[in-house]
Image (cartoon, rainbow, N blue to C red; front, side, top):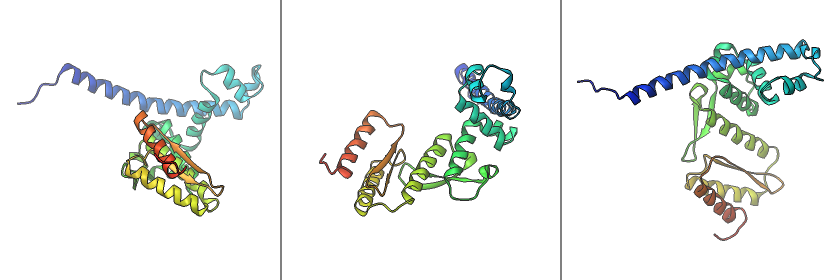
Length: 218
């Protein structure tokens, strides 16, 4: 005998489907917006207005920021309307930022075949195909690569490298390494990025920083 679904359950399915539909439509619309903005910039249509430049025209005539306008233009320049509809603008822009931090010669068109190297909750790494990766995973992977690239510019001081290694291990033991990235520079300064932590977790991270980087007792 088939179980009857509650009205709330049915409505949730309908809402979820509609949200997904709007999301894909938004991606295509952002791609189209990018093309129109690029036309205004390249043909200098903004000169027919009192604004002193393309970005000034954005400020005065549009209801979104310069940064948002550039994001739309990036989507239009590097991807097709179908890709924008399938993945959405936020994911594609995050993917471009990830590619920029990799040292491989890859084009934006190769993004779909790219695997994103992400940290697991256990502190290890896993490769996730771009189509399956979340925007958050892509952004975190980009931050980690950026930190690694900065650290590679010059060797870290031995003592600092040791402290950073101890802190990284301690963060992994506490299940925090997926959201806290630590790198050490040649200037002897440790740099770290912290994302989306609860108040309790922030306290844990601060205690670990004091213990392993500052040498203070907890």
